[in-house]
Length: 511
Image (cartoon, rainbow, N blue to C red):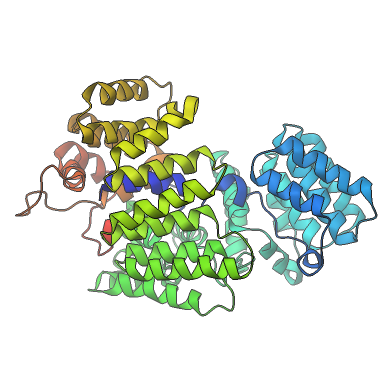
């Protein structure tokens, strides 16, 4: 399977919520378990009463309209529900959030903030508090959102768990980008207060890694080493062991023990098992577990869990989620069952009437990496103007190159290179696909120099392996990527920021 393409899909789905997280110094990390930021990060759980009693159908329709990006329709539906009949207090809370969410998306951020503040004053409770923090985040009031969390009394800090990890991630990331002094206080408070979000039972690994970096900057090395014992996400563990920002920890027993044979895989499996023992799992939980299993080479188990999650969703008469079904396709591809991966992707395309463009591009990428290059190009051709997006152009380069369609490949590559701010990851993948190793080396080296991209570059570097290994197919894209990372220009770029290790994770954490 194409390593570069898998990474591209990974970044599309993450976003995740594929956001890059900076840890206050040189250390950065990919937000490996976050997906579809626009919807997940902005979402707030339904009020408790709404989960047990029938809500006004117009509020449900407004929520769906927001998920589909139809914000004007959502605003009308929420307003109609509020005027149409007497709503319960919980429904009024929900209606206020949906109204504010739509107002913010339509650019009226002052009114969005005012809407939610008025509702929170009139009906203070955990839901309206969490809704206000979420709206502040959406409106770009990150410091105010952080202060709302920091202002919670110790006895009330459990309220923070009403906030989804995507909301917390966006707040912390924005504070980092603005170099706000509030950032360190917020990270410390969340970790020490054992923030876990509404569905989980542990502090998110990305947040904990930030805290570890903070402890290192305070020269609290032993405290930082103890914190590493709770990390379980493969990408986070890889960053810990390779990013030089964490080098003071590498000789600590707790971290050095991770390099023992099988230790890293065992740590990941420990986390998976703990999550499976939870009483209930959301679609996002299942997705995270599937990815963890795939990274440690258990694609068959990932398929089994994914199919179980889809069946469970059907039995509960709710949507399983497009990302979950697409993840099943990736797991099938990992197993070498390309036909099953293509079938799963095509069924998703056929059954979902209006898939968002990023997901349609991701399906095209699945088709391309499983050998259906013509199908991938045909799908990309239906995107009209969206086919000019960087990820779509990079996929076009790869598919056309595989088919030997040189003119189409070169046209797509020229368009990609001509973009004002072409995403380096898309350029890197296109260069690797088309055999432009020198350009690919320069692109990857430049990623190390940019703090916001360094995490992605460091994880890409863990693809390193001896490219001269006997029996290697030199036309294979995985071979090309490994040879690229082993090249002198890239190795020189790596040395200033990281080290390359023979990590035991398959697909170097990006699948």
